[in-house]
Image 1 (cartoon, rainbow, N blue to C red):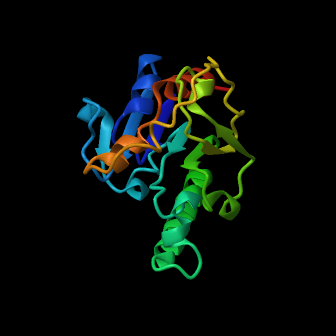
Image 2: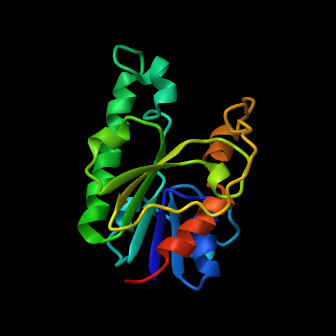
Length: 193
């Protein structure tokens, strides 16, 4: 399968699909940090999305859309206009991806995004469902794909991501997909039908 992982610079999901023999590419306006620049489009996703994909998985920036940021981005808050812009850009990305591909996924935390797009299903998953003893509730808007099935339920419920101290790399570290989730995506959605 030809797979585009949009807004991913870490290449975690890209490498999971590559490991199973798929022609997967990450795409971000940043350099990739995953070690395989030959599998990375350092371009605007709207310039890459028309290149004939069998599956598109998107990880758009979530800061302004996450409900955890309501005190800054909510109605009547100082940066509410940033939320409106983020939702509009992401909705445009979703609509474009759905117009060129039959299988599309949009990943985001609990956010205002999901009430603004039309998907077959909205599923919420946790890292502890895929072998990681941590919590980080993540939403998946799905078009043309089944929900991800848990692969390895574990007991731990550490809030490591939420408790990360401030640092220059905090946002980047918080946005990396857990390996167990990336592997489940590749194993369960990397099947041509």
